[in-house]
Length: 195
Image (cartoon, rainbow, N blue to C red; front, side, top):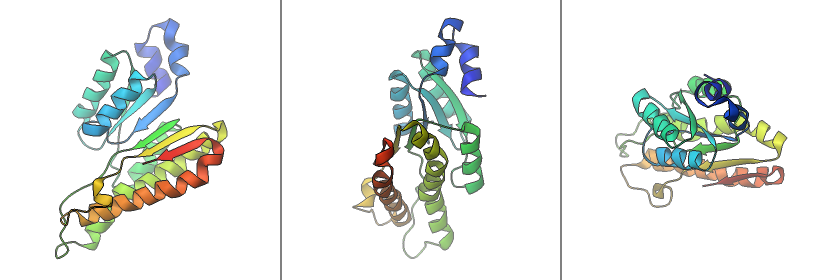
């Protein structure tokens, strides 16, 4: 369901145009934890929020319900960001956003002796490649309007890795370096990128 359809379905008619004209924020991994808190806060600050989850639709719907109970506007979009095609499809379904919060991540124990190429590829795809694909999709709209906000949610493991989280630490460091590079590239367009 598009945000416009959602707005006309759940908001009194006098507010439909107001809702349609609100800035939109996508928060990946917002069905729980830090992502949920960010989504709720953005909604309280007046943004339409796209709540994203990977597998647990009920948790994503709970976030949406909390937002709506507080007078906010939200929709739910599900996609596995460890899958390149699902990431691209998510971006296509959404179309454009004003704010992109890259919070979703994959994290599981991987010691040196046990880590496989598939472990590394899974972490990089979910934590770095999916972030890049979403940025590539949404930045043209941000450039066009000369305004946008991109936030990557980092980890202490980027600088002080826990030994058993080697693949996660490496992939989060890659995401952070992407954000640093993007900050310089996009500043002239009124787009800020922070981690």
